[in-house]
Length: 358
Ligand SMILES: Cc1cc2nc3c(=O)[nH]c(=O)nc-3n(C[C@H](O)[C@H](O)[C@H](O)COP(=O)(O)O)c2cc1C
Image (cartoon, rainbow, N blue to C red; front, top):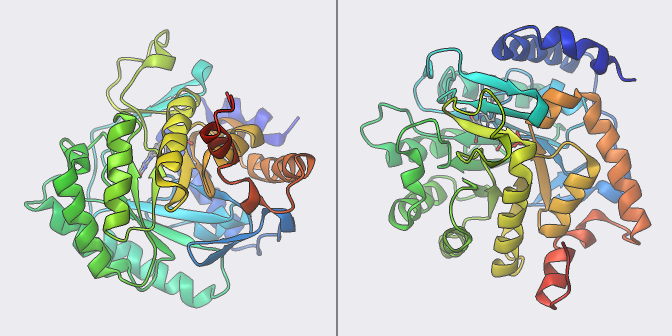
């Protein structure tokens, strides 16, 4: 039994945001205590021009301000994504605004981009880079302030600020917790954001993070637009407004986005559809409901080059990353792959040939 199985009931007596802050503090300390271990060669690959020790990344929202990047790497993650960061600091919605749906292995959150603002994180990231030149990749997820007069301009500002320090940028137009933000996924607004971010950050990879609630056709349309605007890839997906997998929870009527196990199928199906439509020409990061090596492997086989998680970590603890790495390496070997890159999209390609992959 892992230590986290013993600690979790204690942690779960605390409000989710208190438990989260404690975890972040712990990771900050851990990050100062040494470097991450290099993983199995079979998990190593170059994606978006960066070297990844393994495909597992910390999803956005966990370390919004970039306080614990080294700690995130230290528990085994191959990369970290900080943010969402808005140009100006923002308090977010009133508390309570994060809820555990333990039986469903899910969370509902309506944080609303609470963060200390881009300038604060930028200073910390620059300082961290100087001290950790060889460190694993860090992505920066950018958003718009709730009260911004021109939300599209906020993405331009974020891209300019982080273009020199991020390994990649994520354009978050899919949070359900800033009213109207998801409207930016519509063709015209999305196209303008992509153009302006690409122009502001011409030398680093840019990805767009999308919601699992749009139709596959709309997601494929966004993917085509992304290619046309020289965007490198998509992150599929953010939290869902659907309540399908949580209908029996007493928390189901809390406003916000559902994350965790109930998102897995919808996010993976969308990922597969986009991969098939884009013929593997965009880099896809799969996120939503990953809490096992099997789930991560399914996303990779559906077309994800990299996989992120957040909620799985809340329920399974930090040891999950190490466990998933060794199990994923075994699964790849058992299927005859010599490197993870060979497994990306294999199920989607089989589906193209008419084989049944479900
Ligand atoms: C508490 C919480 C806060 C989040 N904040 C952000 C955020 O600021 N920006 C973002 O792009 N995604 C955010 N997300 C979404 C996650 O990055 C991820 O896309 C989603 O939770 C699905 O993955 P999971 O099932 O592994 O949690 C947040 C998720 C949670 C649970």
